[in-house]
Image 1: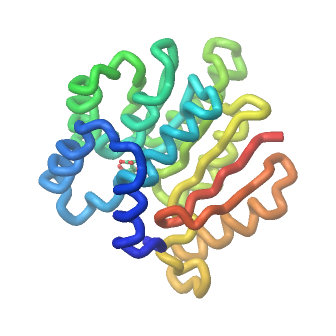
Image 2 (image 1 turned 90 degrees about the vertical axis):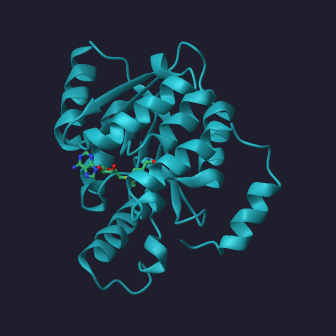
Length: 218
Ligand SMILES: C[S@@+](CC[C@H](N)C(=O)[O-])C[C@H]1O[C@@H](n2cnc3c(N)ncnc32)[C@H](O)[C@@H]1O
């Protein structure tokens, strides 16, 4: 993470309180995956996602990387009753936890969960949009495996309408993009470099949590 823990906590403590269900979700996630619970977007970034979605009038979200459902729950609480989140993940046991909390929060009906490889699920979605059997999305949120980011971004460009948004998480990769060493460091750095020269989108990379890129489709 980029932001010091105390700063992140201070920001959380001086923002509107989030829904109480997130505390229980965090506890359940730590029990389910003690070493991976940091994969959740967390309170501050989650609040940013819901704030952004409601401020931008987003109704339809395509998410790459459900895990135990933290970010999708933030979106679901922000979008209107007739909105929908399609969220992709290949781990059925994490998704089972997510479903339990979506149910508890009363937003289950707003979430379409597709379990399987995100590359193939998103290809199917892209084909359906092309065929006119699925409506394009207002926003895509990319937070699955980092090696897949380039392909997920291309899918997002095809699946999100003009003027819509693509948000990409962990783009600072704990600062390792500054001195890339491992394959994942290079993959994220290369992804960021490609956005700089991508004329299809207007891009803003923010140092929120582990780095969040906001792209607007021109
Ligand atoms: C960082 S976590 C997502 C966190 C989630 N957005 C949240 O806020 O709780 C990444 C997720 O991507 C999933 N994932 C990784 N590679 C995948 C792939 N090829 N297809 C589908 N899901 C994948 C993992 O199972 C994991 O649950």
